[in-house]
Length: 103
Image (cartoon, rainbow, N blue to C red; front, side):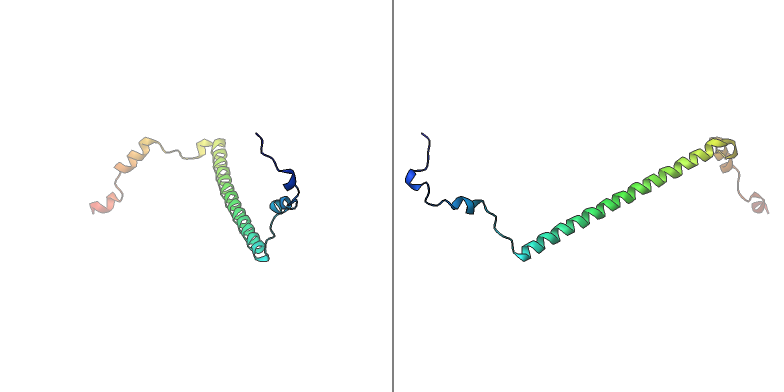
């Protein structure tokens, strides 16, 4: 069986629905605190975004430098010394200042 309002009680407190659904007003202090919190959150978000943008710019600059090096070496690779594995071993075998030690 459905529960309903009795006819005699239907219009006893008709304004109650308005009171239950209305918002309570905030004080000036609450408004200022809410605004301060919102501003602090916006500033923190902006700083975080700037740090991300700075990091991205650094990475892009690094990539650009690397690509420039590749372009420079690709044009005339014969002009740049490319160490081989054998030349590094030969340098280790040659003693430095051998003439001074014999004297």
